[in-house]
Image 1 (cartoon, rainbow, N blue to C red):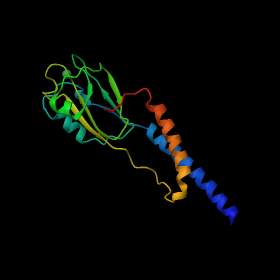
Image 2 (cartoon, rainbow, N blue to C red):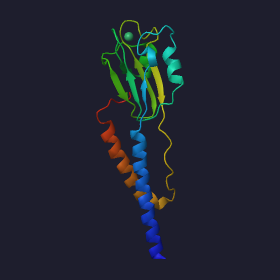
Image 3 (cartoon, rainbow, N blue to C red):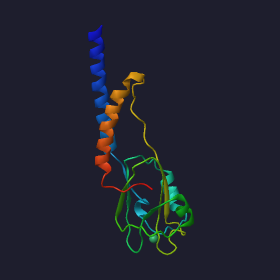
Length: 167
Ligand SMILES: [Cu+2]
């Protein structure tokens, strides 16, 4: 009986570690979105162009946003209030800008050049955290879950360490 329990425990541990690596692999296989598709990042002819663009996407943590443009534009990651008001913040990025989405929730980007933001060069996206792999529910699995989480976290930190933070 004790032996069987031990074997079960080992099998469990292996399964959990394997699942953790699978999750890391899934996180590594990220999607890259070119903001605005063929239009790129510019003043759109339709003021709600980027809202429509983002509405059809399913952004997940680990995905990448690629802002590309020619001419005079920039990207600033801003707060919701700054997005709403098109606040011309100082911290901006030059082209091209690749932004890794690091956490679930809302992300706001604007161009701070002239009145570009007010003319519709602003992007708001919602980032999902993804569906977690089936985790064992018994309460005594906590130490093994912690181990799996530890592996995940360290791998993720490695992946994202060179990227920008979603505001
Ligand atoms: Cu602009």
